[in-house]
Structure formats: structure tokens, C-alpha cells
Image (cartoon, rainbow, N blue to C red; front, side, top):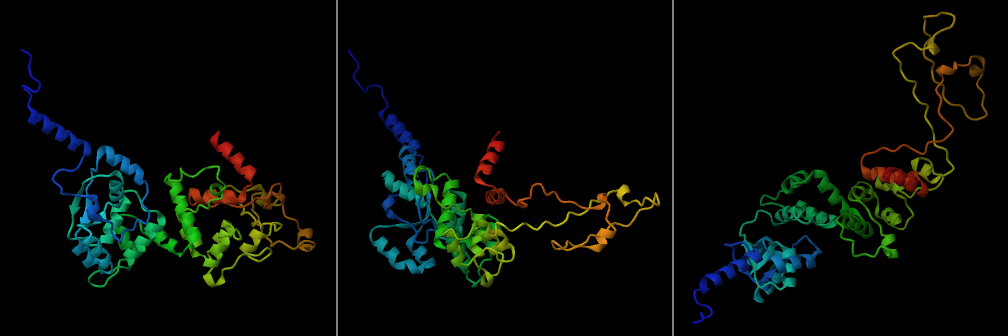
Length: 387
């Protein structure tokens, strides 16, 4: 007699195994409450102005689920901390929202796009500082862009505790786990004009490899202005806004900006060709660089040039350097008593030096090379470095 299908099978065990496999595939943390994504609302104080790579994260959630719970805050607790958002929060609560997202805005947007029916949450009712906690979370994950970080840092510095005390940059840096220089550079970016702020963001996007969607043959991509954070904060943020805009228009070079930024704001101006000082020297291509005489090297042994031929063994005093005379003038002292050739300090004149590069970082080196060398020389340098 043939055996009927389903006999000697533990159907309950099979159902439990399928359920466990489904839970494992989704990787939802066990023991945590879950809600529908539409029952959560983003925080109006979220520092991330633009959510990046949502499609990629949504694809991951469709296959593996959400393995990290979002931190959420009850609406009443949120309104106590940020009363300026009371009307917005209460309106969303009337639509069925149960919590305000604290950590996990990218995950929430990706969950909605992926069509998830439930997401894990971690409810927090006591948060010492929502803003500092958000900075800590974001710095440990996909970073905010430099301007978003600048706004968040400034907002955190403007906040006061119960005693009315504000954080210093050093204290804030310690709280969020970065250096004070990191904080000060970001805050300085807020003094940039919008075009330079976007140039700083674009440079960051390029470093994060988030500009892959741009067409390399597009003319707008080729002339895209990219500005590193350090240069933006230490040079251009110190310029007046009219000079920043002059740089955007191409009326001010990077080298000129580096010099002008060291001058007080009320004295800053676009260098004019032939103007005295460092700025004039940059614009005047015909101006010859002033070459200071090289110091005479010290030696441990007496030099023949310092010995008197009349009295061997006795050394004559070191010659005193004479100031250079204008062209066409004569010096009777030099004609009557010429100095020995070995005692004279000479400077090579076959090839005039084009400048001295002070290397503080790789970015500084690249900027100086770009200003000092011609295009074909830069290409030759690239070939030498790659060989």
C-alpha cells in the first residue's frame, strides 16, 4: 500500500524551521520591539541635509534585512528638548507616528524605499545631548559632508546646558572623539561664500568616490572647482567675501590668496601688477627675484683662504660682507683691495631658482608645484614619479 504524502513528517517542526530561516535571513535583532517604517518620522534637527546611497542600502535591506536597530525618541520627550518643533511633531503624531528617529535616518529612508513592513527600534527616553549624540553616531558611520559637519559643530557650540554654559571647541572635540583642529577647520568653513562651500563639498565627494555618476567627458565636470578642507579653512575662510568671489571668477590665484589671507581683513585687496611687496612680485613676471647671499660655511679646520701669505699659520679675520651696490656705481675700496676668490660667496646664475617650496603637507606640495611649474613640466614630473 503506497504511503500517503505527509505521513511521518513533523509539520510543526518544519514550520518552525522555515520561520527561523526567514528570521535569520532578515537579521532582525531578537528581543527588540519593531514598528512599521511609516510609524517613524525623521528628526527635524537631523544634521544630514542630504541622504546618500539610499538605493544601495535599500538593496541590502531587501536581501539581508536591517541588522541594526534605529534609535528613536518618544514624541513628548523630543518636544521637551526641541519645543520649536512642537507643531510639526504633533501633526505627524496625529497621522499615526509613534516615535521620532534619533539615529538611523538613512536606514529609515532605505527601509521605506525597500518596502519593509517592520523595522527594529531602540527606544531612548533620556538623552544628555541629542546633537552631540548625533554627531558621535554620524562620525562613526558614513560621515557628514564638511559643510553639514560645520553646521552641526556650530549648533553644538551654541547650545547651553542647564547651567547656561556653552562648550568650547576643545570640549566638543573631546566629546565627539576628534581633534580640536578638526572642529575649528569645519567651523571656519561657514565663513566661505556659497560657491566655495560647494567646492569644498565636491572635493569631499570626490574623495568619497561619490562623483562616479558624473560624465568625465562633460565640460562642466572638467571645470569643477574642488577645494580641500584644510586650504578652504586656513586660506580662503580668512579672506573677505568679495575676495573669495574674486577667486571664484578667476581674478585671484591660489598663491595670491595664500598671501592676502595673512593680511588683516581691512587691508586685503587684489594684488596689482607692479605693486610693492610680495603680492606685486607675484603679478610682475618681469621682476627678478631678490637673491640673498648664502652664508659662508663654517669649517673645523683653518682654510687656506683665511691664511695670510706673509705670516703662515696665522689666520686673517673673516671678511665682512659688503652691501650690494646699484648697477653703474663703483667702489674704490673694492678696486684698491680685492678680496680673495676663496673668501667670496657666489650664487649660481646659470639658472635662476623659481622659488622655495616649504612642505607642510602633500596638499601644500601639490599647490606649490602647480604654481611654480608649467603644464609640460608637471607632466614630465608625473612621468618621472611613475617610473
